[in-house]
Amino acid sequence: MKRRNFLTRSLLLATVVYTALLAACGTPHIQDYATQTPVLELRDYFNGTLDAYGIFTDRSGKVVKRFTVVMRCTWTADTGVLDEAFTYSDGTTQRRIWRLTRHANGRYTGQADDVVGSAEGQQSGNAFNWTYTLALPVDGRVIEVQFDDWMYLMNDKVMLNKAAMRKWGVGLGEVTLSFIKR
Image (cartoon, rainbow, N blue to C red; front, top):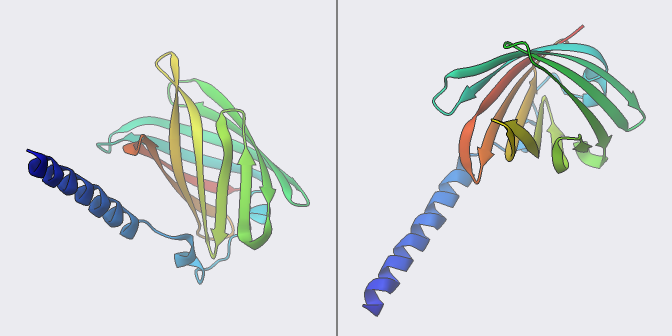
């Protein structure tokens, strides 16, 4: 019986380690984009007014929500404010105000009222990767959802954004956006 329990636990541990290693191998790294152009400078792109058009898809890929965003962005030295006004296809609205701080080596931190703790970001080449936990209202309650948010500068006017949403490591869906600078 002890040998069987040992073998079962060993197999379970090996499966968990193997799965974690596979997941790590399939994850993009911000340094993969170091040579990509045009080079993204957040203070330049997120400055002024931008329009964004997005969708939220569930884990099966079905579009659950469509939305637009008007962003008004300002910077003072290394501190930025991104004021986002969301309008959803069902007519509801939402506002999020990001307060960003630029640090050395393309690193950023950010806070917003519905972000738990601090968002952490890194820029390299034409890409920016942003991770954070969002307190998201769902069906009358609030759940904490982790975001792995990737942005790719296409040209001086257009940026594409894809964010994976997870809860306890389980994929819930994705948010896809296109930003257009006015």
